[in-house]
Image (cartoon, rainbow, N blue to C red):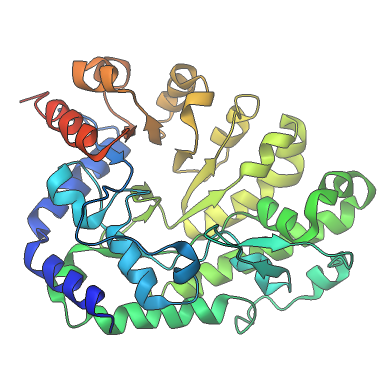
Length: 373
């Protein structure tokens, strides 16, 4: 084991508080259920401080190295740092994931995964396209392809290492990797031609969406043997508690009309949500299709990538009708420390505060936590 990983694990084993983690999870759970709460849960993200003893590895060193990947999962502050959480004092649920980016399902279909410098992996398209026949004929349960075996080996490494650290194992959740969603995955496989495919190869497009959705359901169930979520009916994504077992990433849908979403994408998202439970995530401005997202029969929550681009107050009113929780709404310092945010959204919402520095994160979180006392 890397010496720095062993030292970090020893530190966390001695210093993580199960009682605090349990309190945080209950606060998130209460707001997800639209219960009356004294304050909304907030997670701070911030640049990693330069003078810390433990420093994240560059991603280029992490992608094929489970030891360094686990180390980064415990220290990196991109979604909130487990290592620094005690000092920050925010409401960060403690999660560890196998961090292979958004390419897992696309890689099963033979899409070429490329990881460049310190960027997350992506799919490199070539002149030879993966055809719809190839997609449709792909096995729905062969998970010995693409990056899946690497993910499994990483899961096994995590579980093997952490069995010697019972406090970490009891306190932190090993969570589902990023499986994206059927429309995004099909776009990753086919490229931007997908936006003409929906017209020129509609039947093949729909068959391929059904195949990709089926594989996503089966892969989520397959990975279920390795994850260690602590609360029945809930799971974690993006370092937040969510309802259900999966978070469908649906960023590509911002490029389509509400009618097209309703007819050609929503049925496959619904298929996954019925099978796994969970919610929808979307980045960008999706105000034109938010009603379609929230109208999915089996949706249990909605997660924002860039909430500042949307009309949150209008979305909150829509969500309030069915007590659908909204996750990762960005909040500024003034709304947070003044308590204005609690007047806007008394419950049903979890917050993310993007701090300019580690010190600002500590200061703002401390002020916010005095509210409701």
